[in-house]
Image (cartoon, rainbow, N blue to C red; front, side, top):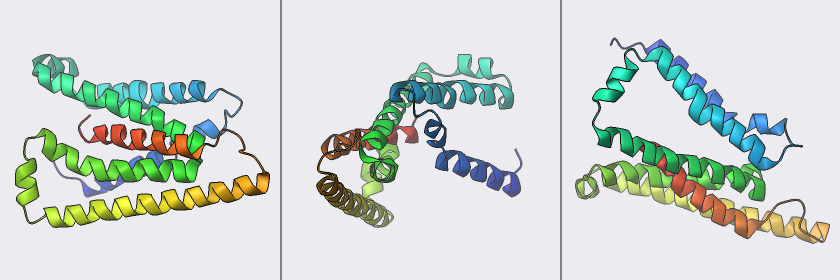
Length: 195
């Protein structure tokens, strides 16, 4: 296969657009129950569209799957299911924390954890830790975790201030529940690194 930087950049742009607007369709179905909108979005985003694109772009897909070792089939399914759970809980974190904080926290956890998941499951973690690159990677992870802490603190202060102004908790916002769900979403969404 020849390298095509222009096509590669186009794919990156399409992926960035899709990633940046994944929550947008749910804005137009606010009168639906959260679970209904999220399951329909998940069905299209994680099942139908990937299979349609794969069937169009991968020749001899059935043969490739049938000749693949069972471990090569099972592990992506396992990690894909973990990623799916992460996606569902990500939606809940948006529900309880709002889109800004409900996206920032799981994204930070995912970035930090997905960096480490590949060397762990490849059995190369000790070599990774002893490499020259590990210090930079660890610094990046610590910066991500510091960002999570700052965003979490800011979100808590904002919620406390809004609650004092309103005199009650509004809507479905719940900071403690949201932080817990965001942590689960971040951990499980890190499975995408292997799914």
